Picture 1 (cartoon, rainbow, N blue to C red):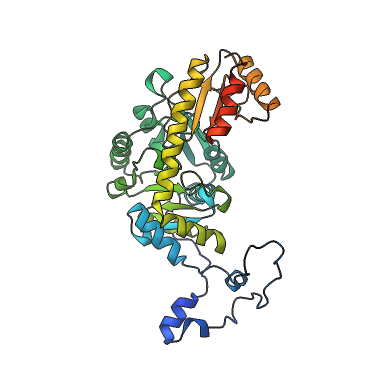
Picture 2 (spheres, rainbow, N blue to C red; picture 1 turned 45 degrees about the vertical axis):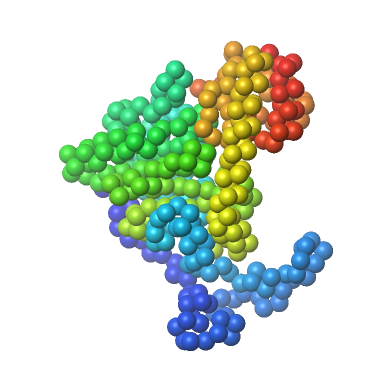
Length: 369
């Protein structure tokens, strides 16, 4: 058996205030919660709040997150029952691993990629098979046949599109080719197809998604976040999106109220204002192109990127380490990679505001590549 295929006990929340008001024909404001052990007294936080304290913060968020789910469903063009709000994308990744893996399971990753996939998989007692990506001359693309072969006995396949840390992007059609191979292999072996989790944290920067593929591959789970294009990293709001039957076992592992009331409200408002994310994506795209062009003129070697960061290769790991130290001395913090990492000779740099990027460009003038 692959992954979790039987229902697990789930903590069932009390009905929402809205649902109780509707059921009994009462005004919402007349509902008093004697059942949830919350405080009726608002704390005095006037010294840190810009406005009055909202009494809603004394209560737990609604268990159905109805407003947030509706906003996400509209934004991603999916059904509400296909949306699971999570405390950032990382909670979604953890829940997927918990629902799909157990001791002795196999998870497959296309490496190098986001380190959390390995971490949450190994925390479940699974072994991780890393399938190398194609080389830089082939855009760090996926080795589709090798992934399909490695996933033949796997419970879970992790993909990141666009990929972190390379910034490379695999079109949905290519992901569809992999899913078709996995489906055919499962049918041939008469075993369940693996869960395929596609982390689309940076998908707004390419304007495409694998979400429509869930109609062809039932065990596809797509992870989204408001941390990147929507600029709400501090709110910690993400989503797992899948067909309801695939989402159900993932939901069973989520703790109650993992997304706070303030975060849910901010996320709902952001999703209802897609123009803000679009403007952010456009601005970052312009700065990304400028950074790549100007750093290239200075002799640095940035790879093409479809995300909000750039991977830059130096001549040696020592040169990358020296460049990182030089940047740090100027108060500019790069992402470095350990000595055993395939990108030990690289730095990853987030695309920031124009003045901040100007500081980076100026610093790079004195740093050899």
